[in-house]
Amino acid sequence: MWFIVLGATVLLLIVCIRQYFQLAQMKQQIDYLKPLIETVENVKDIIYYCETPQIKYRYLSPGVNQLGPNSYIEHMENPNKIFEIIHHEDYEKLENKVLGKVDFSKPITVRLLNEEGNYIWFEEYATPVYKDGEMIAVQGIYRNIDDKMKLQQQLEYEVSHDGLTNVYNRTFFQTKMNFYNKIKEVPMGVIICDLDQLKYINDTYGHQTGDRLILEAANILTNCASETMIISRLGGDEFAVLLPNAEEEDVEEFVNKVFQNLNYHNTFNESLQIHMSIGYSYIHSSIRNMECLYSEADHQMYTAKNAKRVLARIRK
Image 1 (tube, rainbow, N blue to C red):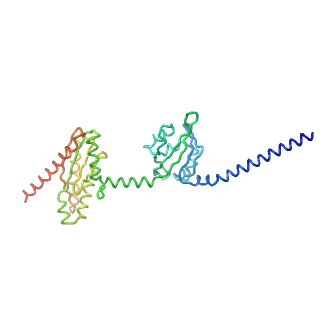
Image 2: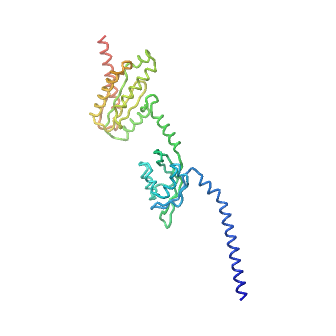
Image 3: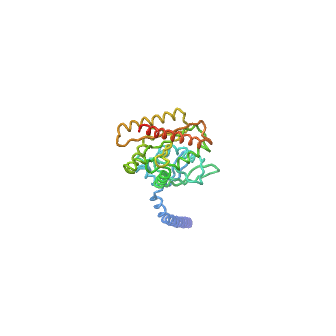
């Protein structure tokens, strides 16, 4: 009998010793991983492991709280909240990612709405997880690139816009001319506008007054234009307007509206009168016709300007 008791005691002792060493080994692993876990928990990036296609987070880092102080709790309780805060233009990207239909070798750029009502740019590096040939989860990192994207947008804006008037510049205008001349076939109207007597105003009242004149003229053109029109300052006192997908009546209506607004401005601004010569042309197909269209509008503009000069001489 005592042999059985002794054997059981020895066996229990062996089990206890084994468990002790296993616990010691686990503690050592935890101590080893603790700094890594703390680093992950404190990192500003949003790190996640999410089951698909029914979204369920197995892990979501506290970095998500950059969207709002309660974001971690909200997303864990409602994993589909990501669909509520993603920008509508990026919604399809998110859907395709969940379905495994994106190129996971490339970063995914999306905008997420924070609690203040502002969209923040993120660059996501996602990796699919497969089991038996079927995607069961996605793991990845969202990195805040908002400052980078805003700087890039600002640089792109400065490259394509005129510094004085904030309308598009000659470079952008020429790019659009080439696009509609070689790639995109649409009905097109072109308007060329040239300020009258800008040199006289610069010489008489100074360039600051001349700049005010240019700026006010740009504002009038912008206020008369629709969202589809492209207004550019070609340089000095010359502006151009592209009207893609317009009817000829739309071109004429825009020109008449500009003249009406100029008259209204001049009625109430005797010290800063704006006079403008305008020419326009229209064609049903822009392909291979943009240069001719521009030349015709430019010719009409100079014809109108010369007619004013002749009239001024007659009146003298």
